Length: 372
Image (cartoon, rainbow, N blue to C red; front, side):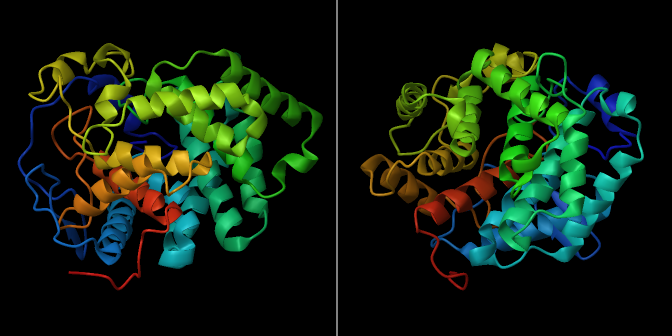
């Protein structure tokens, strides 16, 4: 998300800025007092040796800079951080308490907003990211469901749309791209919270049932959506049949590139990303017919396949691990070109978290101190 729940900027900015802006000068990708992360570019040098420490520094500093300079939960940075960082605590340590406290502040701000207001625009998806972040913290750090997380999830359940999804926008794929995508975030939040579903109130249980039915019956908008569905089913086993899960897994193998990686651009036609407002930009890219592998999609696919019990020893997984180990940039991130603009390429942030999760689940991270 590009703003906090007050949405002082998001609604106006997203409505006006759904067109592609011209490329900006090479401003820092993230900056705040004491933090400056260089622009993400395709020509950033590749590291000679994989460094977990460099990747961690990029992710931690990027999240802190965004929080301190923007003061919001943004899907591409702080939203990604709060959802994914807790599960890496065994190798990276407990996430900074500053970001946990900030997440609680944002949830409290949501509770100060009326339900009618929270159902507008992208706000339901913002709450879903927050609730998922709270649930992941409890699952991997606290070890039990906290009152704050229960409260966040209870609020989330009140924001379901009539069809079973959660409201989103469609002009900033892949995160702010569809109500379908938002529904998967809500489902992951519910599934991750320790013990939450054991004592649901009847009206809450009905919401969860409606969500499951939505995901079981609503066709995914593209193969990227099917990937998100598999991710969700890894945590809600009854969501898909064994045959349905295997069909998605085979689809994922069909997208693997010759170099062992995956490209996000092969997972949808330009017209089906969000509202199709990026189609002209995507079709004009020099690599349109043969898009290169990228960190976001390679990491995400491997991470989800491992969760789906595909063995790390599978040769196709090992090829992907080799690609990840061989394509980290000097800053610690992995390059992924934005689907939206050629300015800040914030997708390199998730494009760094997903590779770390993939390598972690393949027992291929190595020690934190491993640097060039």
